[in-house]
Length: 230
Image (cartoon, rainbow, N blue to C red; front, side, top):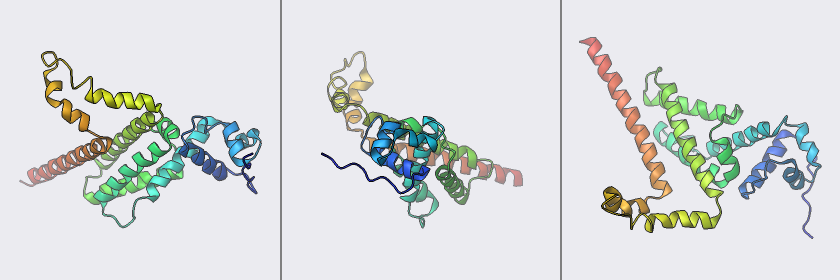
């Protein structure tokens, strides 16, 4: 018979959140239930809800912890551009590793200290890069929404049954590769490239598109300043 978890000396929101993160890393869909947390912590399920008003409050707290985990993976001595890129990759990795929570929290705001630290870091980096103050919030939201959207997609994909994922992957080399060239001429041309396009390449391209947008905006601002001095 498996040993029951050791009951913590004192139950607290942090202890509950850490337990939920452990369960989430196992890919369990019920990780935010009182039953699962009670089993993990060796306490009665009702004890969890003495510390959180409802499941949504618990979800936001666990999501905030995932953001903190991603934030802590970013070396603090990086210059602004690599700092933001490292964080983007860390978010996708962490959310995918905790897929049910990652998929659920990706479109949300956690309102916690982890999210505040992340937003502060992003705003600071974009300011250091040289964006105008009026543009910093806009491009922070652009990057945040892009990364969270992709992290949510990857997390949502990770919770699918393996046979479903296998069938989806095979579609790129089966259905797409034999599509009617007369009806879908561009698919016929690019089917091989579509099949080779992995998730890392997609994330790289999203980040690349973000920097293209930032550079274009920076150049536009520079031209505006030059014109005003003429």
